[in-house]
Amino acid sequence: MKNFLLIGLIIFSFLTFNLKVETQECEDLKLTSTSDMVIYENKVYCNLIVTDEAKLKIFNNVTIKVLNNFTIKRSAQVNVENSKLEIFSPMYILDRSSLFIRDSFINVSSSIMRIEGESKLSLNGTKLYAEELIINIKGTSSLNVTNSEFIGNIIIYPYSYSKLFINKTYYFNVYLSNQQFDITIYRSKFSLKIEVASKPSNPIILPYGYYNYWNLSYITKEYIGVPGKIRVYDSSIGIFNSNEIIVLTDSLTVSNSKNITLTLRDKFKINNLRGGNLEQSMFQIENTRVNVIQSSIYAWNIECYSGKHYSLSNSSYIIVRSFLNSTVSINNVDLIGIISYDNSKIYVIDSIINGYVKSKQKSKVYITQTLIKSPNNIYAYDDSVIYIASLDYIPSPVVRISGENVQVLINVQGSVAVISGKNITIKLYIFELGINTLNPSFVIIGKGIVNKFGEILSYVGENLPNEIYILRLILIATDNTTLQVNKTLKIETPILPTPPPKPLLKYNSTSSYVIFYWEVPRQNPFVPIEGFKIYKGESKDDLKLIAIIKNSSSYIDLKVSQGKKYYYAIRAFNYKGESEMSDLVLVEIPRLKETNYEGLLLNWIASLIILSVIFATLSLLAKSIRNRKFRH
Figure 1 (cartoon, rainbow, N blue to C red):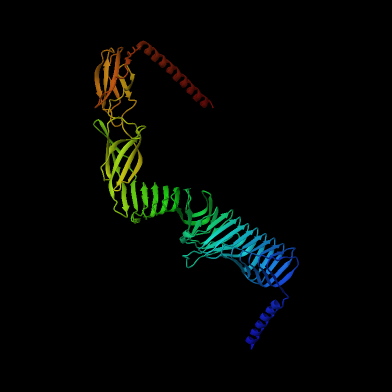
Figure 2 (spheres, one colour):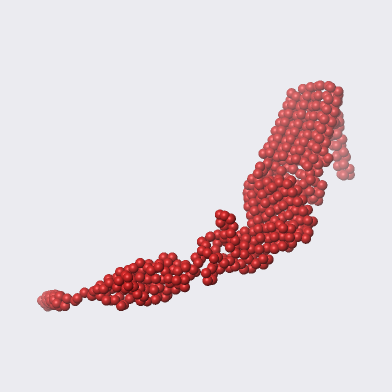
């Protein structure tokens, strides 16, 4: 019984509500042909239809309600200014018609506004409210929104070429399907969802939790073929839990996102991109500004097109895709992977490749001086070719003396490879060691064994200064493609064997001997001094060899006479010969002074007398002290 009463109450309430709506007093308005009408007082219309180039203007703070049907069609035009519209029915703008609303308030209860057939909807300074507003745009229609607020969804239907211009507007979503479109958004805050032919099974849209951040759904890479245009100026798009976003805007904000991929197209000069976990980073990529806040970037996907030249440097977390005869130069980049198509060329130098390298459709990849962490993940298809040549770290060369020459031994390690979809292989690879000169710019001073990593020997037949040398690896493939790798290194080249330089001789003399010691200003570490020859004479023209000293830098001459003068000199020698004679040193041997025995005896007697007087005085003083004690 209670259930019947409850059902009856619900039915009664429903009928009462509908009766109110249906019994609300209303009238029909249908303007046709070239009618021109102005409404400046409050009205309630059951049906409001404007058609066949008719014109209707609503203004003067009036309130207009439409209960059943609001249609503008066949080139008709409606203007609403400083008024309020309450629409309880679906709203249609069809067949090149237009609706212009300015400084007004619109409450749409039907949730549907449809714009079709080259029609226009313009909102300026307008607040548009609905619980679930959907603005459908079909054909070549357009929506223009400026300085307005509305909560709702804009859906651009497939197989249409629609235009959307939004300026300083908030709280709206844009849904695009796989078609052509032309969208301009200026100083606005919005979310964007793109559904493409290969739509993911579970697109993710999650709000950030605060009204001025926005959502972006999962965007798949199949979007590449869509000819639509999206221009966003001085606006922000928030990306949350997305897989990939194609950066087509002047400004892009990525916040609270995980493992997203940002795709950059036709950016010709890119550097200093970073990926991974980023607290807050700003990247300026030509005219595009990307702001990443508390997010992780899985990869920057760089796409290059149309026979142009691109450069990429000093970056990480990078994927490069080249198309259509483009050329890409990559330097000092940490790469996830490389894919080349359509006769394109990619040059990689001084970089790291963590993942894959793929070459397709007659494209070519040239990899030099690059660390390849997954050498089994390199593929060439069709008539494509991948060339690889790198030199590994080179330890300090070993330098030896061999007769008249210097021998340099370098342990050379590296990698060479040619991976091809057709029959192209390595023809040969060789090593050269050289130095830079002005003319010619590279002088070869040694060559290694062809087609073999290992030791390279260089014989230098002249004195060379310590300088930077170049070790060169040259790879030649069977299609005559040549790859060249240069690695610089410093070799401490010795001065070739020469006699020692002139020593510097010094001395100290006494009446019975002379001590000599010497220095050599500059020595050749590769040709050490073997010893020294000591010369002596009573005249400088009559010097004779008196000693040969090895393993010492000093000498004592005991064969000297008091009062005489001697000339000394020294030569250093090694297996190449003797040095110049040192500067002559004149040494005068001093005489031993005579002893004054009488003076010594007198001094000794005087000392004894003084000591006797001191002892006598002390004895008398002690005796006097004792006598005083006995008296007391």
